[in-house]
Length: 250
Image 1 (cartoon, rainbow, N blue to C red):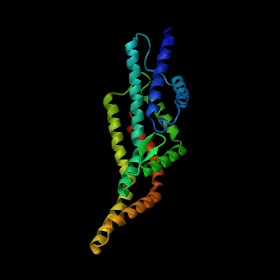
Image 2 (cartoon, rainbow, N blue to C red; image 1 turned 180 degrees about the vertical axis):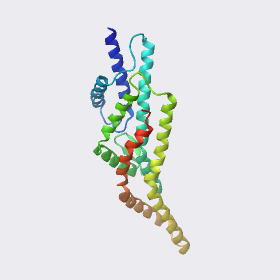
Image 3 (tube, rainbow, N blue to C red; image 1 turned 90 degrees about the horizontal axis):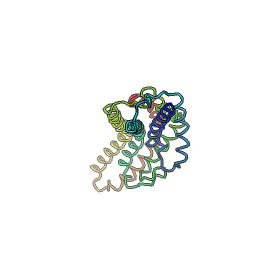
Image 4 (spheres, one colour; image 1 turned 180 degrees about the horizontal axis):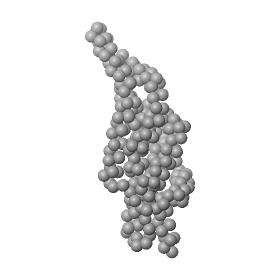
C-alpha cells in the first residue's frame, strides 16, 4: 500500500510540473487548442518522465499537508520555467511593437485568433513567422529538453530556492528587452535617417506639409525594412536555445 501511495504521489508531482509548464508555454497555452488535446499531449509526456526520472521524495511519513506543499512546489517550479520561456519567446513580438510605433500603426490593432487578444498586424506577422521557424528547427524538442533537464537538476519533490527562480525571471525580462531592441535596431536606424531627411526638407521648403508626406513614407519604409530584416528572426531561433540554457534554473 505504501508503495502504491509513493508511486501515486510521484506521478502527481510529475504531472503537476509538466502541466504547469505547458499551461503557460508558448503555442501550447493558446486558447484555440482544445483542453482534450492538451491533456492528450501532456499525459504521455508525464508517463514517460515518470518512468525514466527518479523522484526525490518518499511517501513514508508524508502527511496530507506535506503532500499538498510538495505538489504546490512542483506547480510553482513549472510555472516559473514556462514564464521564462514565454518572456524570451515574446522578444519577437516586442520588437514588432517598437517598429509599429515608429510606423504610426499603434491604432491598427487586430484580433489574434490564437490568444483572443488584440495586437498589431506587424507583431502578429513576425510572431507567426517566428513560430514557423521555431518548430521547423525542432523547437518542440527544446521544450521537451527543458522539462527533462529540470528533472535531472531537481527531481520531483525538489525545487530551486525562490531567489533563484525570481532571478531567472528577472534575467528573462532583461533578455526580452535586449532581444527586442536588437531585432528592431536596424529599423530604428532607418527611421532615424528618415526623420533627418524630413527635417532637412522642412528647412529647405517650409511650405511643404511634412506631416502629410511623412505618414506614407514611414509606413512604406517600415514594410520595406521588415521584408529585408525578417531573415534576422531565423538567427534569433538559433540563439533561443542558448538563452534558455543560461536563464532557466536548471
